Length: 119
Image (cartoon, rainbow, N blue to C red; front, side, top):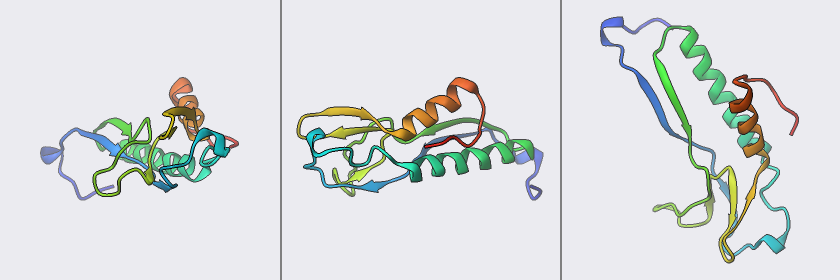
């Protein structure tokens, strides 16, 4: 990686890293499987974790990574139309459903292994 001094190195914790998708806030669970097959989010997570792995191998002191966010949530700048969650929230009835990316991320956590998974 080069270019950084060990004397200036600080531990790094990545505390917010997420992929936004756009869906209307008024969709309900009865409206179907909207947003559940979110391969783009899984690819995003995989690419970022691979970059973190490469940085660690190069000597960067990365001690933590937190995906943003577990659940779809209200975003101050965008309201409810931006969806970051590994778990879909159908806001009208507050139903929560795991997205494919949640299963993907859970498998990485369970196995402590980064590999491509079929989605």
